[in-house]
Length: 316
Image (cartoon, rainbow, N blue to C red):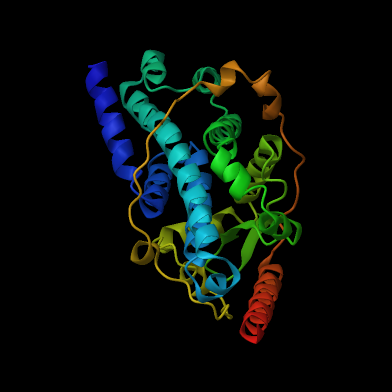
């Protein structure tokens, strides 16, 4: 019985982990079925952002700004990080769905699926206390430590991407951000700071969790996910706005092939990280701030930068 369920979970996970679009759809469909588990909705919208960042690399502006080699490396970084998170987290979600139908949590299956000891404890805590906020935070902590080992510490990405001058300048200029659009044409979100730090990424995840589920804006953001089929193009949300960047924004499956991945070596991060539960501490509550005008200014800045670079390149 358990072997059969294990096989079904891995098969369904592989199906959903095909590319950025399938991950987004599987996350958001799971939340529709089980809204008490909050993390999949957060993961779905963050996955949408990953898709927009991926297709940006194929846009006319970024083809001017970045070399082909660097754009390929950035795509590989986004793709590998998001594949890793889905490969680890989605089996946990399917396990929960199975447990919900059985009315009994079999934790042996979690262990067979390679779930970290940290998350095994947190799932037990959830079934005993039904604390959805804490479970969402725990999944954020878990997945950020997962990509710490497989992506952030990877010598290629660490040297060629996260230590590059271009990446440092982009982070300093607040050009990297996660946005939550609405069907009203409003945008909420946060810019990414110190992405190389696992502590900073967890803090950002907790901020995004709080923002997404804030009662002032949650319904409007959720409506966007329901009404908007993900394509990877920024047209997904620009269609609701009264302005456009003027940049091209292709559909993801028109410009990227399916990428094959595998685990070279999978370790339980929680066996080497001291007191990971310290990250569970709640953050201070804040009022959502609309970022639509801020986002507009960032795209204007980007437009000017690529124009200047084009002029300089043509004059040489």
